[in-house]
Length: 408
Image (cartoon, rainbow, N blue to C red; front, top):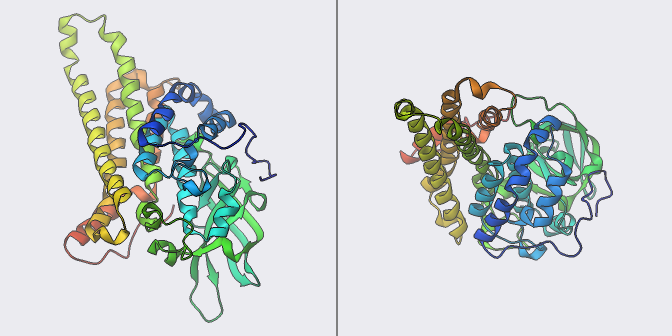
């Protein structure tokens, strides 16, 4: 177990719980709803999900829902990850986002060599953060790689992580750079407290800096191999879900958060409106028809967006091999991520507008959700134009665009 300040607490003896079914995992998340919601204001104020919440999530076994059974996990699918993330995000957007990120990385680790998986997931309480685009230089040395002067942004959940997956390119003389991912222990990472944002403040998505570190060869994998879905040729875990190309499925760990935030906005808006309606006469009630229409439309939009994402996740979960999924089906998935996140944004904005002056106070739950949902929709995985353009190109038989979203 890590001895760093981020070491997981010894909060439960023995193995963590595992879930037999999707419904069991969702029920466990739902049971935590009120406790997480009660801490949402403090989470935003502290700019970090509390250690208490992380410990409760860890002890519940939810962080391991897509971890292989080989390492004590539930080995459930992306549909479960999306639904559990949404359930938690409906209580606290920042908590849901951090959960999805940290839980999803236990799937990503299966694209690394088996020894790297053992290094990290051998401790079923360990959590892993990521920075996909780390600066600095990486050179090949005896037994592995040396990373020098790396710095990167948006490392959600870093304050609770024992490991970090970072992306960089290996420099070799006379050869083009080779993009790779590396697993680095938290002891080699400096956290920079620069997360001061309009929304999603509680995610603590701070920047990190790595001055110099040695990375054993077994804790690295090429991006080319990860994109193939066949990077671990030795085959530590060969259940179909672990053979999917990472770029085609990774944002399943994120999209549940904005959908859950929108659900939270619907609940918050309804909770604020119901007491007022009880004192209205029939004429006043009739004047609220447009407000009720907005509520119904927002609810329908979120249900529709969720249905698209759920169908995509189930398609991937049930695929025996990534090759059974067509190019058009693969391009539909990022289309639907962008559609769902932007639909969630619009639905929340509509409700915030309808809330009038009561929604602008700092103690309004709705205004916090409004800021969170708009911030979540800014993620590059949810960029509307590139996702829609690529789907359109694929539908017309054209190759994917070379001009995708850039990390920001």
